[in-house]
Image (cartoon, rainbow, N blue to C red):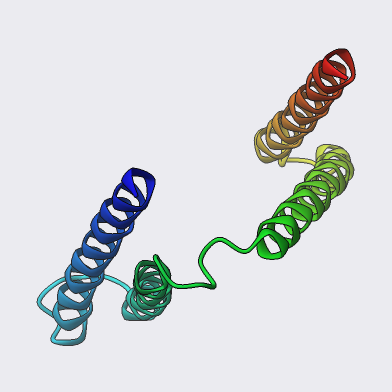
Length: 150
């Protein structure tokens, strides 16, 4: 019961905050359309759509608390497996992007006059590679902890 109240409060606050952010971006969109503010209305439309989707998801999560579908073990297991797969996919995307950017930086460096841009692209690639290594290290640490506990 206490856990349910905490979850209800958490999702209520999340719904209210995302709704307020949506309203703020709608105001920015109106200001951009009426040329009062020099902004990008396409970007504001994308933000409004994304925030509306997030607001609706938070609202439906809030509405689902306390129903029989709320704490289903199968749903929790499926969520856990999907999160693990998404983690692996994001790891490989980061590694692939780092490799592609490093190759692109190498080609740019051979062209005259592109040394600064090549350095920036190479720096981004190295940062992504380091991020991949941190993810790999976290995964190894978690595996060691799990093996040690069992």
